[in-house]
Image (cartoon, rainbow, N blue to C red; front, side, top):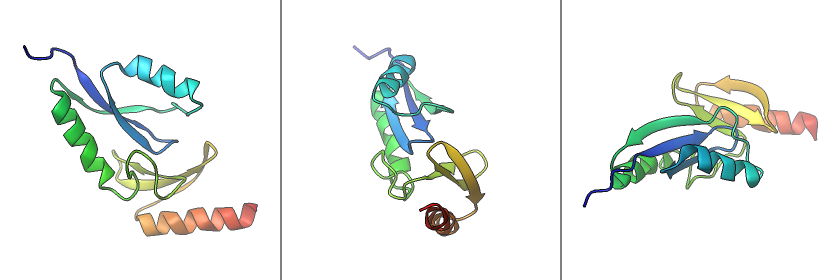
Length: 115
């Protein structure tokens, strides 16, 4: 018997976290309980097949910004719609750049000026 559940692939942009769930609202509530920011959470895709949802999620994990659900470059998120990288630190928008390298430079510059 085929599973009739719908699965979503979602992004928590301020956490640089991507995941799959069959219950989006409940999963967001769980993230909040764990202290993660769910502001601007975005559904990236909806699937009737769980395996397809995980395959779709895996394509994002190949991106250097979203490695394994956690950000290899902390504070940098990829804006899927507009195709640029945002630097967001402690829920504060620092700026956006076209390449990951430029975003890393901006983030490092921000850290140097605030520490």
